[in-house]
Image 1 (cartoon, rainbow, N blue to C red):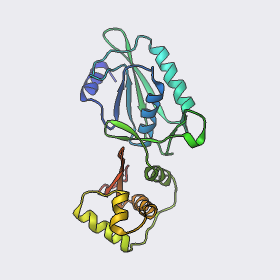
Image 2 (cartoon, rainbow, N blue to C red; image 1 turned 90 degrees about the vertical axis):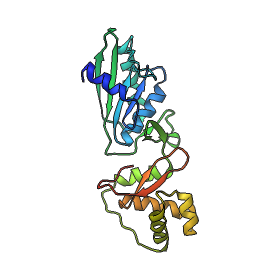
Image 3 (cartoon, helix red, strand yellow; image 1 turned 135 degrees about the horizontal axis):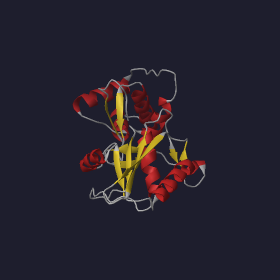
Length: 220
């Protein structure tokens, strides 16, 4: 990438596959973004850019690169695939561009404590990286399994699809309510329907929503 392309990219602002950080003084927050990209569609994390889209650069780029690289190795499990590019600005400072590849061994965890039960999964939602729900974690795990998924079309599935004919989206809570089932059954059913490509999960900070999947390839 050349400097002109970088400027055009930064001008677009943060989004599903683009995140800016000014420097590496909060590496745990940067690791969260990297994990989210790997668990979603991949993306670019650009270090040396202010929130107002100003290209400031890094005074000691070698140190920032060392910190980020070590933290990726230490805190992300399993290891992720990424590429790093450095671009020099007019002020002689450098910008680090981490290209995080979408993983085929999801989910990846942020492991800050070394305690397995405290590992967290993050996914990307527009310009934010949010903690994955139980449903999204199970979907990510299910995508790794080679076997095909099948579901039996019954009364609860019929109520679900009728609801989605009239409404754009549904949550676990709403599905449990309209189908008169408990949330555990509602959750399992929605996970299975995502894994069979009938539905698509859209992660949210409060409660995920599920919509009809009209895409040829299932994404979350």
